[in-house]
Image (cartoon, rainbow, N blue to C red; front, side, top):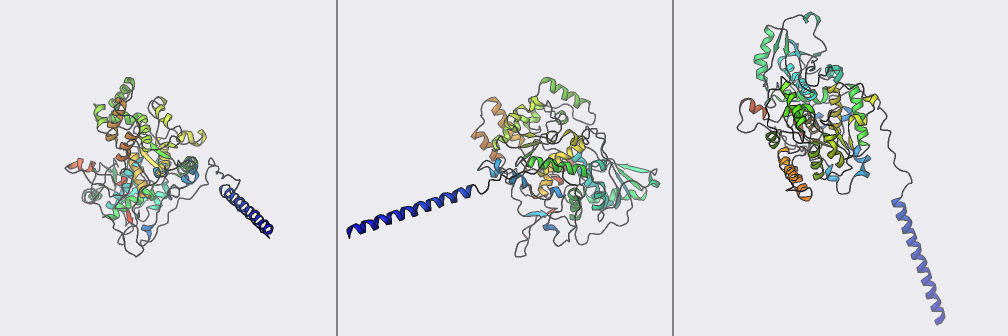
Length: 534
């Protein structure tokens, strides 16, 4: 009896052992299948294949629901999430916050006109416009002139682009912008024609320098009265001719419709711009760095930090020989200490490292020719080897139609910058302001604006050896820029105490931040509206 019991116990033990082994084997197989579900490796699409041509059409939505949707060019219509999917393998664990956009506080584009807004009535005359400056200065001026044409009841003739500026670009409007789309998109706002009628070609025209930062009253009371004597008014300049604030809401929204819906780049520019974006995204989330370390900017600003005496003399000569640059004598040390100088490539490298961006971060250099070339780029290149540009991303054949046309090359940089995961301008010029405003309009994409005045003090300490790169510097720079990342906020008014033209100059430009005029907060589920800035 005892032997039988022992045999039964032994048999039970064997059964239990077999069961345990079987369960363990199943567990191992389950783990294996979980981590290796397929032997296939996700493939990447051919990023070097030109995209098919698209039609850049925009549907006007009804007033009741238009503010909840975004009407923008097709390649700018969605947040750049593709780069995060493609580049997830490149992300360092714990650094996702570096790419996370700031809070948009549920603000969305709302640019539809009010109920009492009417189609353009019969115009009283023709408005000719001579734009001035670089690409983004001209873009802002063109959009302002659309609003001015509406105010004075004029037919707008397609503006003439600046061919005499520093860049000496011979491009016409249709070379840079989609002319037909511009005309059609504004049909319910302003009549736009390509050329002045032949019968008026020899008519007497009045050339006017419209007063800077003028309100609606100025155009209605002073400019519109010129129709009594003239059929054609020519605006000699277009930059900053319209006030940033205190304009009717319909005029402000027209400026946004003109800027973000009507004024698209020419199809050939849009196509190559999208191709460059796709090629950057294939490398993972990327930073677009507007590195304004170019000869014209350094000469204009008088900034010579880290330059050789020969380079400083060359820039001084350029400034002295450029007649329309009024300021000739500049103290470069004072300029830099006040934050008026663009960051050097070396300083940008220190800045991005301190913020925590790893060395394998892809960076697109949105700029023309960097002054000094490799001699000034070596420090940044050593920190971030994946420095890309349109010249590196596109073939010689693809880029050939655009070279020697500064505005068209700048338009390519603009597209890649607007679509980037993070945009960092080294200087707050026209390009930086235009891109920041467009990114705000598209949902407050992450834009880090360096505090140049504060950074210079820290960089000088590093140069003097009183501070080293590391946790302390990184903490100081990170804290300094927590509130400088493009989150939703109301456009800043003039600096307190300023008067006259200085008061207008101190205002945040309309195209830097279209809130509150062109952005409204989302409707809540209960049907109420969250608060809207007015």
